[in-house]
Length: 77
Image (cartoon, rainbow, N blue to C red):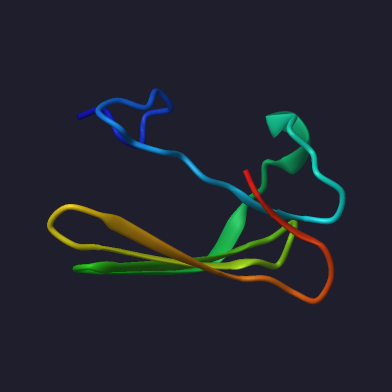
């Protein structure tokens, strides 16, 4: 499985939370991040550009993501 290297394989779906008007150009919605927490079974960070908090975890057969958006228009690419 090549998950995480930019080329989805075996059903991997890559998502990106954004805010404001929908933008599909990765050069415009790309961002740095801070406040990273990584533990067995849990990962969290805050995206600098959009101030979206991202939390992820996994089960045996599924990955689960939760996004905490600031007030306003929200998107998931």
